[in-house]
Length: 129
Image 1 (cartoon, helix red, strand yellow):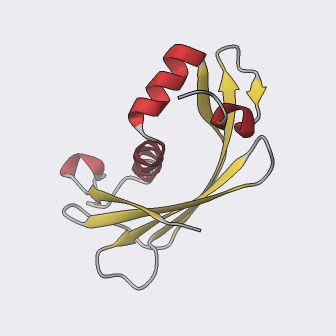
Image 2: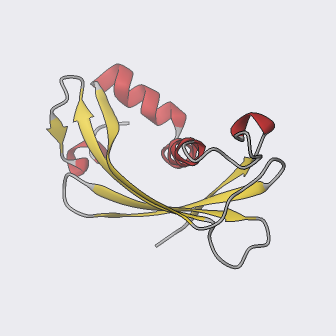
């Protein structure tokens, strides 16, 4: 299973009053990494031309270590198909030089059309480019 790496720089605006990254911002980092993995151009084309998009079905996050202003992070993403309708993405956030992840995320994605009807991933992946 290939791992996709997405670098994140922690900015001051990402932190809360205590100087650590606000917990919900890790979900934004996960989202940016997924977009980079799939490709913005493909996502826009699927939505605009086919009315197809991806939605988060479930999120499970474990926070084991906080990031702070100035940290350089690496969002590491691997995925597998759980069924024809659901993809499981393991998205972990690592601090530079760390020996274990700071944030461990498991995100379940589904594919839907504009009327929010569930689509099989196989059907989407076989569409003409």
